[in-house]
Amino acid sequence: VAAEAARLVVTPRGTKSLDVGCGPGRFCLIGATQTDGEFTGIEQRKDLVAAARRAVAGLGLRNVTILRGNVLDLSFAPYDGFYLYNPFEENSDAGHRIDAKVPLSMDLLKKCARHVAHQLGLKPMGTRVVTYAGYADEIPGCYDCISTAFDDDLKLWIKTREYDPALDRLGLATSRSYRGSAGWVPPRRAGQGRLRREGRTHQFPAQLACAKQQVSSALEETRHAREQPRR
Image (cartoon, rainbow, N blue to C red; front, side):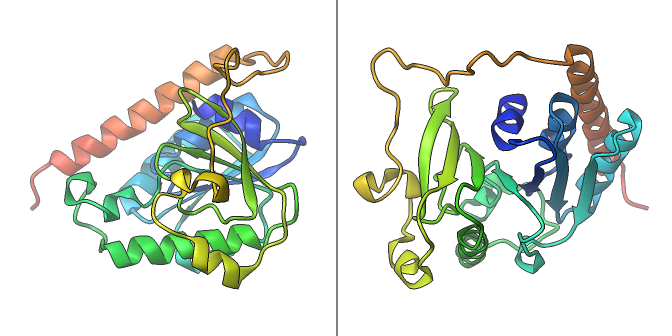
């Protein structure tokens, strides 16, 4: 999924991509080994940031930057493409909570979704955003879903209209994916079950496997550290 998402975002070469809520950096690490793009991930949890940075160092990647911070404080202006793997889901249900280290609430979910939608709305026409899972509430109405993959869970959105903040505030309702003619409609039709890759091939299989291993190792270290008794 991460490899396909990266290839969708990185057009053309040198695209600066932002992963919102990057966790241990899986998308950035895999994307950096599969494309010629530059990747930045932002994550607010200190241990996940540390795990991601260890993986970056382990792979010797020069085209990945991991930031620790809150997306509400971040401008999207420096970036060309974006990846969102349902970054605010844990605010919606206590069962989705990763840990108790950061405050969570439905109000925060809505605030973050509005911020991301506004930042994306300010980007130029043709901007690409890839989402995986979730309801794509962060995608403003000026973007259209162009294609999907992995049973419609992976979606490519492209900005096709000018952004109207006032109009978008009226339309940014729950479940962006189900707004019918006003929002996302599954583009899959008979005979179009999967996203066509148009001759693209999976490159650098060894680097991809190494990136996955680095992510797994960093996550295992993080889990082990969390399980240690506090002194």
